[in-house]
Length: 231
Image (cartoon, rainbow, N blue to C red; front, top):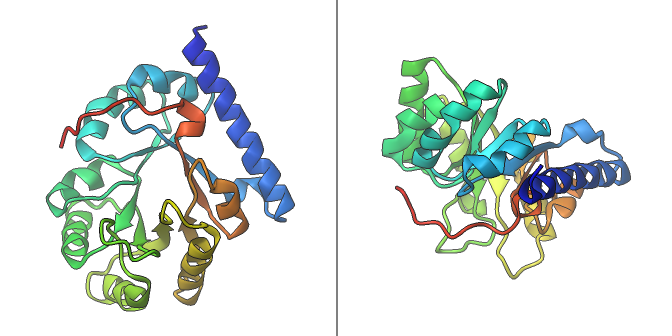
């Protein structure tokens, strides 16, 4: 076993223990939280030990990277579930529907239209999350909180999209708790049961605010390698 393998496996085990501990403290069942291991930019060799440890839910940022990396891994490890956690261009909707079991960043009408078209054409419906830009950060994608209710209604009534939950990424230099609370409030009043909230630095807080999916990369794989965009 290599040093990298030992590191990845042991860190995954620790993250799982941390999730279980926080869930117990919060009075939640540990299986109410899904760990999405964020494997974006990591090569297959870095992902293999995590797969061998039994992890089957992974997050990628880019359609093209996932298409290049995951088919061979899926052949070796049945039951892999891929989540697209980064922004999605409308012209990549076809491939996204083919590749991913969940899409976390639905955020605009043009993307809704493209997804609806491909879902109908392919007969394949991934779990869909609407991204909420809780900090109203201009450099980030996502629906502003004040526009969320109308956008969710449009997703359902105009495009027929079965939105299952919300996703948020709090501003880097702000306390995450208010952003998680706001996202949970929007989800509750719209009857949405899934919350994609929390990353390496703040997933325990997210769980306390009701996260059902936590997106953890660095705590499992270590520092992310330098990566040139391939899209």
